[in-house]
Image (cartoon, rainbow, N blue to C red; front, side, top):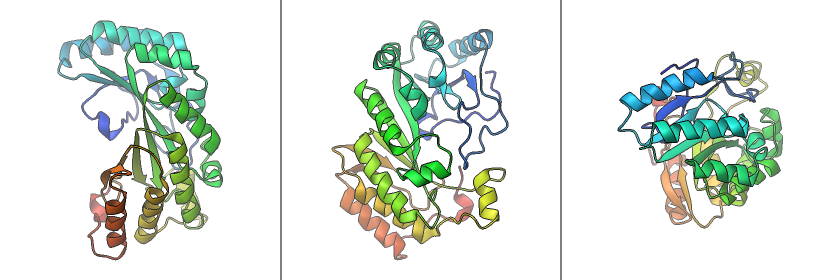
Length: 289
C-alpha cells in the first residue's frame, strides 16, 4: 500500500483494509490534534488508488471491510466518491462494508440523495468527531461548527440509514468548563441519536495550540477525578432508546463497554466506585492514543 504521512483509523476498523484516498484533513484546525498538522490536504491520484486496489485484491481477500482514510474523505466531490466506491465494488467484490471519517461541515454539504447513493455502493458507517456539545468549547478548539450543526449532520447520517459513530473527548473543556461540557455533551448525543459513542480522554500533544496553552497556564486538564466526573455526567445526561457506549480506548483511565439505557445504573455505580478509589484505574504508562 502507498501510505503517506500519519494514517489513522478508528479502533473498530483494526481488521479493515485501510485504503488511503486522501492525504491529511480538509479542516486541520482543531487545537488539540497533531495528526495532520504539517500536511496539505489533497486527493491521491487515480493511478495510486488503483495500485492500492491491486494490492488489496491480491493480498487482502480475508478482510471483508474497507476503511477510507485520511481525515475527511466526504469532502471529495460526489463523482470522485462514486468512482472510488465503484472501483472497490469491482476490484474487491467480497467487501461487505465501507466506512470513513466525516466532519459535520462536509456531511452537510452532501444531500440525502448523495448519501443514499453512497450507501447503495457500500458505505455503511460514518465516524464523526463531536468532541463536545458545549458551544464555547467547540469554538475554543476551532472545531468549525456549533452543536446545532453537529446535531443536524448526525441526524442526516441517521436519516439515510447509515451507522453513525460519534467520538467525544473527556477533558477537552479544561477545568473551568468541565461540568458544562459534560452535561451539554450528553444532551447533544441525546439529540443526535447515534448508534455508537466512543469516549477518549484528551492527551496533550506537543506542537498543538492546546499544548502551548497548557504550557502557558492558559489551559488546565482536569485530574483523574475530574475526568471521571465528566464521564459520569455524560452517561447520566444521555437519553436515547438504544446506544452502544464505549469508553474502552487506550487513553481512558476506566474502561467501559455498555449499552444505554440498559446498563446505565451499573455503569454509573462503577464510575462512582472509581471516583471513591474502590476500583483501580489504568496506570499512566499503559495509556496511549
